[in-house]
Amino acid sequence: MISTAKKADLIKQHQTSKTDTGSPQVQATIMTARISEITEHLKANKHDNMARRGLLQLVGKRRRALQYLASKDPQGYLDIIAKLGIRR
Image 1 (cartoon, rainbow, N blue to C red):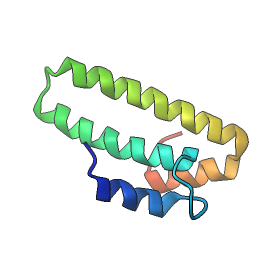
Image 2 (spheres, rainbow, N blue to C red; image 1 turned 135 degrees about the vertical axis):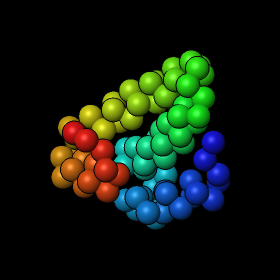
Image 3 (tube, rainbow, N blue to C red; image 1 turned 180 degrees about the vertical axis):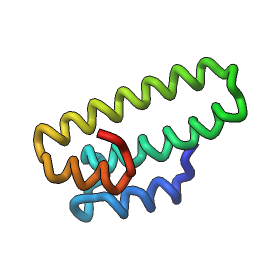
């Protein structure tokens, strides 16, 4: 689970305006942090199938958020995947 301080820091880094907490850029950033934490957990706990299922759901949710962003703001999409190090 992501700590509140880390989540607030991620929001600050990727928000588009001062009050932005729910834009696709911010959502994708938070989901990426959660995905990396779950991936580390699964390296140590290979048989945790519930975590694996949650990881796959989270990856799908992030993919949908990024598809929405690509359709609305193609340059913003390219910027965010470059910042997060996500493949296209």
